[in-house]
Image (cartoon, rainbow, N blue to C red; front, side, top):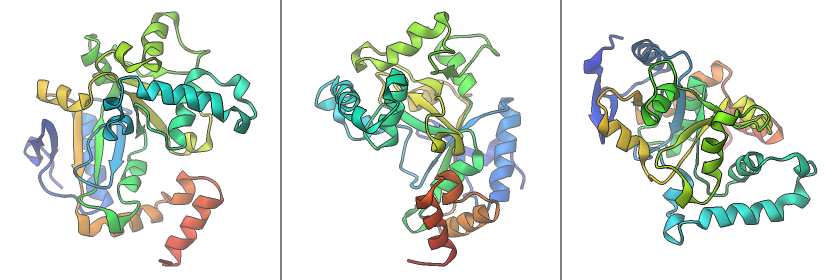
Length: 275
């Protein structure tokens, strides 16, 4: 498949493919083109099942900030106080560990899930083919994003480690500012890597952006920069089940991404065609 600049168009400030992709090989070709074009070895990906879903974390999608600017912060404090009986090793938990746990169990946060695995992101976009509508994968160069937001020179961009034993003094204040009330945060997100406190984080090659004051910051950045290294890769709705079937043959399944009995059960349901 021939890919060049004409392969993409801009929708709401973010570049996306004109022709909807139909199989995994076409997706791999697009990924390789983008990696070479942006000169990035380890981009991030986020899979969404519906074309209308934007890069907005749950706390903003649910508009909880309208109740009060610090609503999420209060929720975080309540969760940390009341969840301790259910986490035996909570004495060793950092504030970041608590925050990732809160996200893991479905409470709204300013975290947005990404993965370093391109096929993993594709799986999440077609995980439930019957509910998919133009499933899509967002591609982003997190190093470019850090350079752009913090006005760094090319090659100086970074992803920030949230392991308290690995955070440098230089970055501590910047990183810790995102855990406080929203009003004290900076406008744009920070690209962060979590400690592997859960098997799913490891299996899903998880990464996150933690968002600041802006509700839709990636759209703002993309509209301000026609060379933004953020791309939305769209797929044919009718091929969603076929894409999931292809991924199954490549070992990307519910069981590999959700280790445990629940993931195993979902694999068997899919394999046996159980409704």
